[in-house]
Amino acid sequence: MSFFNKMLAKVGIGAAEVDTLLEEVSYVPGEDVRGVVRVTGGQVDQEIDRIYLQLMTRYVRESGDNKVTEHYSLAKFNVSGKMTIRGGETMEIPFSFPLPLETPVTYNGQPVWLHTGLDIDVAIDPTDNDGIEVRPHPYMDVIFQAVQSLGFRFRSSSCEYHSRLGRGVPFVQEFEFLPGSSFANRVKELELIMKVDHNGVNVLIEIDRKARGLTGLFEQALDMDERLVRVYFTETELDQGPQVIAQELAAIIQQQAR
Image (tube, rainbow, N blue to C red; front, side, top):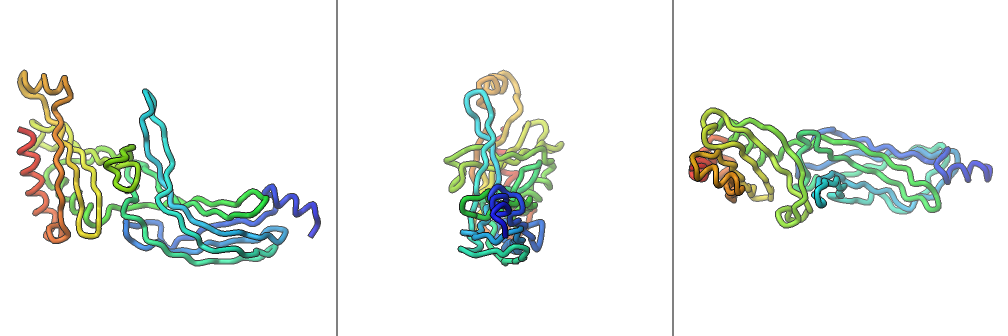
């Protein structure tokens, strides 16, 4: 192969290409993600130092009066070590990894994607990005069903910077709900932050109370109308179904919204 073609490959022209093919497009945290990385050789042979996958998402961080979007790598995996891809050759390398429990749900356009990269010395590294859908973990799904059964309706979700509450990641995913008729006279908004582990789910509940009377107006003016409650639901409790969880949540909301 000519010296000219080798030079072109170093700047990405006629170089190797990479494409990641997933068995599924939708997953829940804890589930195995499986697929293959397809590498297609270009016009010349190229030495690849490694092929890697990064599971990516993003969150919002406040900086002064501005909001800054940060990209975050939830996990990184090597698919291969050093290898050679011949010109015109096609390779498919299988992979499998568990989707981390900290992976956010892709509600409200929250992105989660798989970034594939090839490390090639003294050349532009080929990359590929593939978005995936992340559904709620089964434990989270029980909580969502319970909240819905109480008449609350989903409004929005976002990933916000919070290093302390993130517990392993620098952000939390907040889920906001508006009340139905049962709680509309006492609650303006319900916000949940959930942290799933293998034995259950830790839920931080924020209840934004409606102002009632002069005391309520005073609390609202001083941002004292919010109530925070932590509760842990075990796998045994969650297995009893949404109605049992709904009863516990209703009792908490009624007590805090007085």
